[in-house]
Length: 430
Image 1 (cartoon, helix red, strand yellow):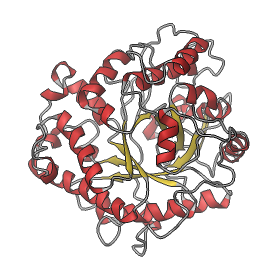
Image 2 (spheres, one colour):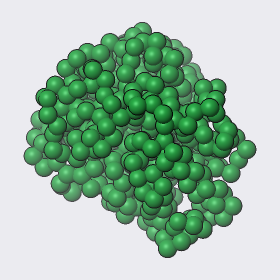
Image 3 (spheres, helix red, strand yellow):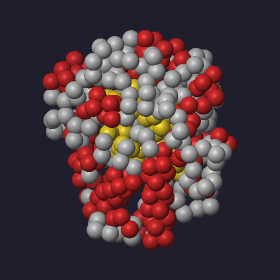
């Protein structure tokens, strides 16, 4: 599955020490007017992993889903009082920066064979209106949701679902919004997802439609979501909502609250949707993203080395540089990205941040090769976790954006070592 990415020029950022001081002293406030940007993208592989999903599981029988492992307790011994800590408690996790896994290479057997205990386990739900949509992957229809929940329970994780139905007609194709048949099936699938989560009966995270919001902002007059028509009132639960992109967001939240109140939901801003971070923040607020529970942060949808090499079909993309400077001396760098994260956190309801589909590549001086690409985001994040919590971070979910990327089975044990070291001395949530 393709995903949109635009690398924009970087403005001189404020020093990170100032950024972190602001975050600690004014968490949840501020205007979110930072203009520094770091290229990010959603999208993903969209694989159904249906081979893992026999239909025998309802997903709700394990008692391990809401508990933390012995490695997961906060080193502070007490919970924080901020929004990230509150949401961690709501989903049954400890008050520390959470770490998770997802994507093609993070299958249960690979996770368990390395003795890993992720806090979050993420899978895609893809398709609306076709014969291979996610509800068809198992029987009864929609049972894939509970298959994933059972897998998460088995490893002591909270399940996370990335709803990626809007791309069914092609990446960036918004024609489905005005197709009554497509949207009727779209809403039926959304209801089914949350009905299956109600059967699960435990907390879960849902990531609503990566890339879609960026395309709406780009392709709509004035970037105004009220000017993008969408069939919303055909959903029985949303008859009173407007037929536009704001109604789409409101309907997603309404259905979640009605059918699966234990689920927590978040929207992923697309930093390429507008020329400035402030414009993206304003758009997401107009959409209604602040009415959700968290914000989905993104870094890059492939390992940096894959874009550098340009040898894979799913890494044919102009732009760069793709590899961020971990010394924060030249651009792009991690300070740049953290400024954007802080702007989203402060500007969109003070909601906590969950980084998603963060690449698993290993730092190196050369680009690499298929499934062994270089990247330094995982290395930096797990070695500097306090920088993430200081800008509103709740957790980081690592995973492949395509089957050709580095995974936990091809990273030479990097994730195993870094996550173990982090969990031995975890960073508490403020």
